[in-house]
Length: 272
Length: 328
Image (cartoon, rainbow over all chains, first blue to last red; front, side):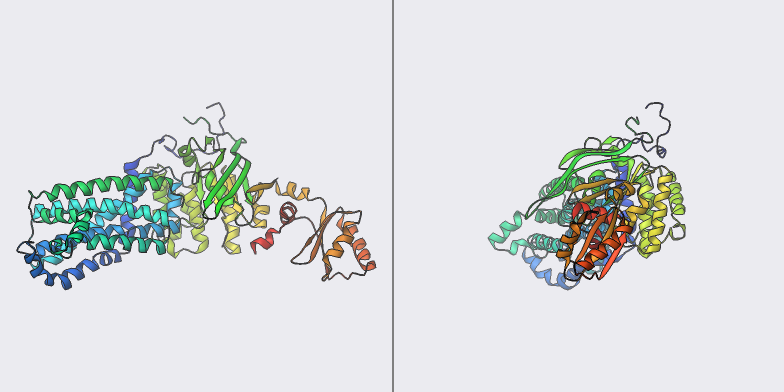
């Protein structure tokens, strides 16, 4: 600086000093805002668990024979509900891009991109909100299943929530990346439907894949969600020695890491 | 370190041969084709042009939202390509279509914005109150922005752009869609910002806005700056007065007639309106002579108008089109 005393504006205190981005604080700020704004429109809760609840009430009773026949254990609901929890996690995160498209339209994303805030925080703040909401939905789902005779294992529930969080951290960022790329509900909705439906049908959430013909079993085995479902079934029921746990958790973790990196990049370069 | 912060009277925005090409399915579109600008600190600089001229693209490049295809720029003392984070810290940007979530309150948006710019919680809250009071939004501070009127929402957008006291504020079409009263209000706010030392760079397609509000302006068309200067300088370039003559169905013959007259500097025919437009040195003496000559040649003018040149005449002279008709 020279002796030029008349700089035009006096920067607010601390502004020029903070030359590095603060990803943790920014993530918290975006998380907090997103949670508050979502809670102002509480329909998310109903919308997110509507289908799983319908499956629980109207489809679950059909399962008793099928599950026993496929060797799924004595309690059909302890086989079925963990799968529904994965469905809650999937639906709770795959559709979150809709909200981002709305924010793009409001100009909120553009306004944030012109601030010095961390680009990763724009993604993580929102994704963590999605994870928290889907965990709340999963807990509601578990509570609703108790009257049907679901047996609870507290450690198993905690472990299950951990895997559901990983699934959310894998799907929500991908949903956001797709929303940033497509920018319109009309293009986004068929894409998400087209991806989630086959994932769901091939995951063995609804019926045991042991009942399927060979080619269907093969398609199911290359679906990462199948392994997540198997892992959640084992964890939920406290079958800690099941080898599917390692496979399912590792796959979910790898996908989450890749998804956050890919989507983080599209937030930094997106030209809305 | 605050090295590179420009001093008063210096240059706040400098661009050299700034270009941006978009790839579309039908090929490359050159939205901005070599823009050179020099905006002094403390002025209101207007970027005037029709829709699609490249105004918003230029603005978005200067606000770090869009990477230039080529060219260089310095904004608020920082190099746009090398130090985008420093640029972001020193500028504010108010996008064209709004910037608020309808479910969030005005105060909530301002506090968050302050925190994203690095203010502490207490500072951000204090600053939000300050901005709300200045913009007379304090009564609506805790209402969701979805309940605001268009003018209020636009003022809040500006508030979000100035929460961190930027050196330069970019405003993209700040008054588009506002009623006359809200527009006058917005002009006052912009002038007040300038008085406080903020450099304002705005785009507009309103001639009146560019004329009344901007200290200097650049006229942009098809991605190129076609004229620049103060409003008066630009109008001065259109030498003399403007006369418009309407002669039913005989535009071309009238054009040929007036072009031969010694006091007519330039003349052109608007095919759509069939109006002959001429630039003359002294309108008040030219009009009677014109009428006599037209009469002698057997033409009966249906209308005749004499005006001092407007920014629209400047635009028309440079581009061959009327901005007023483009906007309509």
